[in-house]
Length: 237
Image 1 (cartoon, rainbow, N blue to C red):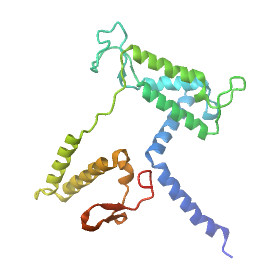
Image 2: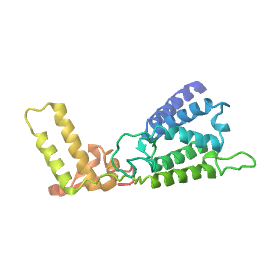
Image 3: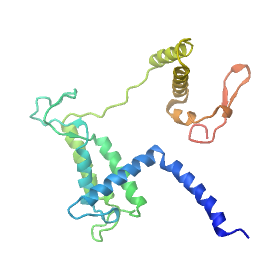
Image 4: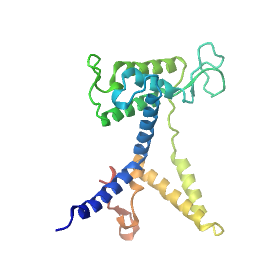
């Protein structure tokens, strides 16, 4: 009979490998960083606390603390730059944009749920998820109103028009065949060309297509197209 430790060791290694992959995902890295920031903030309070003892006021204080690290200038009505769209320097405070605050509250809510603090906050019992308290929601409302009064409009992502994409891909394609460039430069041009082509044909699902390996792509007869075999993500599931 095989000893128990001989079975457990490879099983533990397998679990550690899977966990390591999960821990390096962008979202997991951000969540881990936020958890450390919150724990550090709670421990620095006059009455140190932990995640399991944090209250709604602690959450709003943390949001205010994070807000001071923002880069959105909120001009007061008496400021000469009030309503200006250019980011000029003045004495008005810089804060996080309202959308970022909303996203931060959502992450804090999930963080407390993962720590075993699910459900709505109960003022009488002092239990539940502190990020779900009405005072936290009210803080977000006040931030939005403040930025609306300061004439701050949410920034939209700059669209990449077809003409720009066509010129960009043409430039990359020409650069690939320049004889004098180094192999590394040629690879970078080819990589970027493939990415933008995927972005064009896949819309907003290019990240899924970007995970495809060569052996998962088949060429249709007469080079009329490609056949992808992929089960990861939403595009080709």
